[in-house]
Image 1: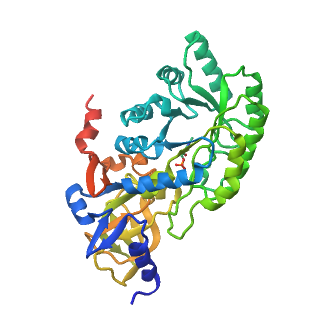
Image 2: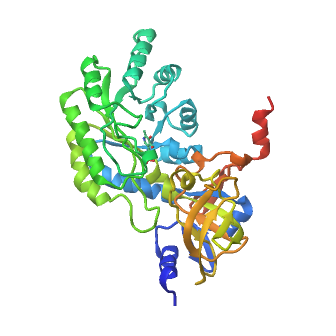
Image 3: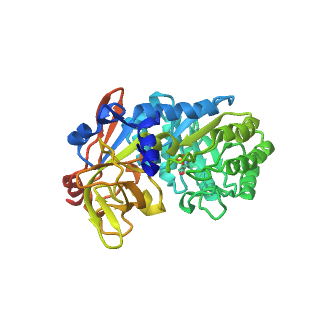
Length: 428
Ligand SMILES: Cc1ncc(COP(=O)(O)O)c(C=O)c1O
């Protein structure tokens, strides 16, 4: 009989039909692929993504948003910049949100046509803006009065350019999304967008260049009220300027990191937010990252040591703050599953840590997990977004490999870095 904590764990492990990892016939499989064979072939730490999961997340978004007159789903490339993942999403209809030239080039390499690219960011250079205009992107979202002036200057210099992108104004509605302060972006003290009075002043002085509004109030949001407040604020603005005919509502949907059912409530979103979006009576675009790719990826890691001190137990593994920084950066919670073919009732409370030279190098703190020993595998869940894309070379760590599983087929989509890759850049 399974009791207590392990009963719950067992349910999560074996009965959640939507989980990427399942125990089948004495094997542990990720979307049908034997996890030990994957690790044998590709080594750890290893980022694994599932096409099936990506597709499911995209369908969920469409099932909520498609009742709008015209809806465009965009993917925020910052969440994961692998060109193979981008290609899969673009082939399935997604647009791409980028913030700099490198992201633009990756989006293009992933098969995104310029007319499905939206340009964001609060630090665009003049040269970059000009290039994006020339490339024919769908939209450029203006972050400040100062950037607006730079755009006007570029257009004067270009002397009646044809086929301009749509220019949209990023509005900062001063709304608290009740998420981690580092990923709140729509409060007046945040660096993004323009305040309402500045937005009005720009729109009044503008001679028709700006034809849409943009906002993004933060990431990993569970608070439906914050979206209501933000979009109502934008709606007020739109009502006063009839030429505004497009709205980009950003992203931010929160996911169930803690595996306790806390995620954005899509029924409440449908009931309370969609009616506001319908009142815009124009095409709506979303640029979302975490909700699509977060649950579609896991980071596999090997246990190096179980270090027992008189104060604490540390599970030292080969995942660390260089290949997954979210816990170190924002105290973010990621569920960690030991992958044992035969589960046991033995439980430990441990800090799951990496091997790098920072006390903050940890994946989980005071976590109750099934007991582990050297060589065991851990799956760190919901790491498909802001995992690899925030990885670094701290302690000269090599960034991990990435694999993509699709219909019982698995392919390497990014090689593990080697010291040669690091040295190449220094041999100047
Ligand atoms: C402008 C903008 N749009 C979209 C996103 C995507 O957010 P999320 O991954 O939470 O959906 C971000 C990320 O913070 C962003 O800065």
